[in-house]
Length: 80
Image (cartoon, rainbow, N blue to C red):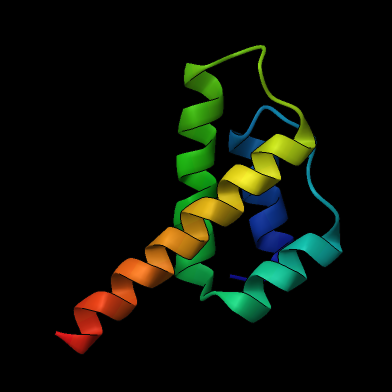
């Protein structure tokens, strides 16, 4: 998935304004498109389950944390 496709996914599923294109570019430099997509879907679930408590910055930080955790988990499994 491209940054544009991921931004479109965010707009469709996360009820918070869409991050800048630069944010998606950064995520894609650091993580695979699959990891970014999964993190966006996880972010959507979290935001929807706790309405009224989310701003863009918090949602971006949550998504980034999910991506980092997925990468750590994947790397641990590759080493074993």
